[in-house]
Each structure stands twice: as structure tokens, then as C-alpha cells.
Length: 189
Image 1 (cartoon, rainbow, N blue to C red):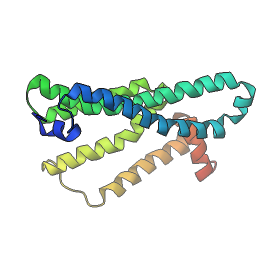
Image 2 (image 1 turned 45 degrees about the vertical axis):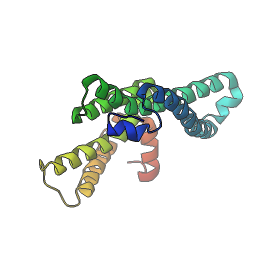
Image 3 (image 1 turned 60 degrees about the horizontal axis):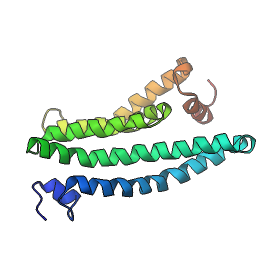
Image 4 (image 1 turned 90 degrees about the vertical axis):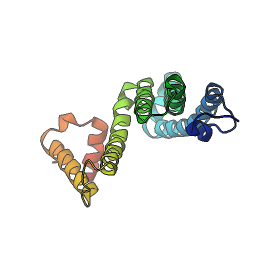
């Protein structure tokens, strides 16, 4: 094998053609994604839509199938674009630069638009803390900020304070599903 870039050799050591490797990756990742999302959606169906399933099984199963395929396609494309974009940009520019990985994050992250609009916000809220942590660690590594001992605890306290303030004063801004969970934990105000 003759790989021009080390990252290509790591990502696809048995294939020196980036494009050919990504078609196989798409197929493999789609199967892995379905193995994740089908059982997850079965559980959600059983817990939250079991009554609807007996009333209108055709519609419920259509929504179930679309949900499984949409989520699996999102995760598949997220992984494929996350691994493909650096290869393409390296070949396009003839170099390997740090901005390529930032562009990769943007391209892979844009795959969230495949998901249902209601899930897009949830995925964003899931990814935001990891993105902020990554940014902080990069700034810390480059000496642009100083370490704050127990900063994660301070951030958690600020987040919970904000959330509890919203729960107490402006419940309408909280998603109904999250509000139900919070009411179970904290009771009525």
C-alpha cells in the first residue's frame, strides 16, 4: 500500500483509495446504525406508543420504520462524512492542516439535518458540552487560558442554577418531555 498521508493509512490501511474505502464504510456503518436504532425505537414504541399500536398499527409502523431509517442514515452519514472529508480535503489541497479537521466537524455536524427537527435540538444539546470541552482543552493546551480547578463542577452548578431558575419562573420555555422528568424529580413548584 502506498498512502500519502498518515491519517489515511490509519483509517484505511488495506485500501489506498479513499473513495473505495468509504463505500464499504457506508454499508458497514449503516448496518451498525440499524443495530443501534431498531432496538432503541422498539423500546420507545413499547413504552410510549403501545396503545396507538393497537389502534392504528399501520401508521405507527410506518412512523417506526421512517424513524429507524432516518436515524440510522444520520449516524451513518455523520461517521462517513467525518472520516471522508479529511481524505478529500487532503487530496484537494495537497496538505494536511488543522483547519481541515474544523471543516470536517462542520461537514459531519451538518448531517444532523437528516434527523427529524425535534431530534436536532436534542443532538445539539448532547454535542454542545463536548464541543465546549474540546475548545477549552485546545485553548488550555495552547496556553490561551489558565486551568480552573474543579471548573467542571462550577459549570454544572451554573447549568443547574439556570435550569432550576427556568423551572421555577418560566416553565413554558422547557420542552414538555423534559418538564415531565423534572416534575417527577423535583415535584410541583
